[in-house]
Image (tube, rainbow, N blue to C red; front, side, top):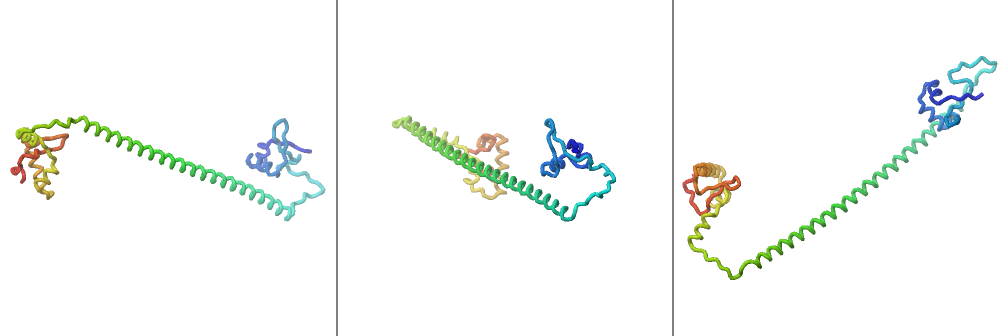
Length: 217
């Protein structure tokens, strides 16, 4: 007589997991059938934990050849499963490699497009600037001549301001220690209200047409 058992009951009785039971069914080690949409294990009346009744005929033990054959079959199934896993892994790696190549290619195309657009913008800006300068030159009166008197030229020269670096270069102050001393003197003179000095955007400026012998220590 056949006895039907649920996979969970069969697993509990054998002390194994349900996944192991389903794996045995898939490999054909266990017989199973579906009853009203539910899966059952087909077993004999004598369950794995039942104690066999005494009979006149002793229970036959599997021979060594049978055991080796069953082990070989199980090993072959495991090898097939392992090969299938390897093939699936290789396919996944191939797909990922293709995706990476496509991404690199698309990124390269985007970079090339951006560079070309930037070059076009540069060219357009240069053309606009050239056109603007040309129009400004056309607007300047060609016959207008400014007459600058000596007094005006002196005022213009007085308003010519230079920075510290240029001042050092003009005065021949090249050594670093000398520059530090002169800079301290200039700052003190500015704080005292020396008209030869001014600050523009936080930087010290000097009137290029004035003399600074008194501050060149």
